[in-house]
Image (tube, helix red, strand yellow):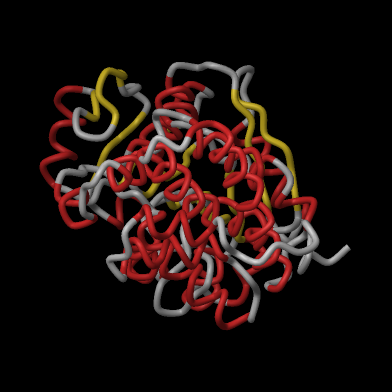
Length: 340
């Protein structure tokens, strides 16, 4: 696979960032843009003024709304679309994928209806020959910082180590270091579930509960991520690595985190509907809270932070009452429910 052409599907902040990173490495990048108007803006102004303002888009990037043009002559596809749109967009692209395609998920979410990760959605849509050629890239990476070329690290995961190594080769630069992992579901679950904890941490910060409370939420949140992840076949090492703990710390503490920002606003008294109306970009954690809550019930694992965050977002429970109830959860062994 020496093709120096590559396609990025989705022109949000992260899709645009990855497209620019790849263009800087010498790839000719087809950038599939859902919105006609945004595609026009990117072509004419060489800037994604809606999702990534302030960063020039390389001349090696060719924006298009055409699926045929996006797929023509391409063997590597990077999917950067929200979880609720992944199935529909993957279905539209399925008939255009060549037999030797690599499909890389760069989004972080769990489909609400099926309760499966995005690569599992792809397995239901793409032919069986591509199932071992699915991959994901995830980690503690804010788009603006990667676009500014400040140091960052991520994980390339695939059940086939050769595919993971290929993804590593595609993305690694002097400022963006990529490690490999064969625990695909663990990498995807870590990237999705940490957004739930980030909303909880934001709520705590919005209520003014301080650094001690935030640290406790992050640490206990990781325990809940591990309980749920292990019940679904993920490795504990993965969930304590870059795509789990690393991304969790970043998203719970960083001011650029959309999910933490949602929590902050809720903690300060705003309602979820009001917050969503004012958002240009998707905060995946809002939907992932539903998926995590349902998965927790399906797999019969404990998760008080997940429960209380769900109750705040979807049952109109007051943040103050939810945090009070969290402090009254029965305390047992610190690592109860985690397989040793």
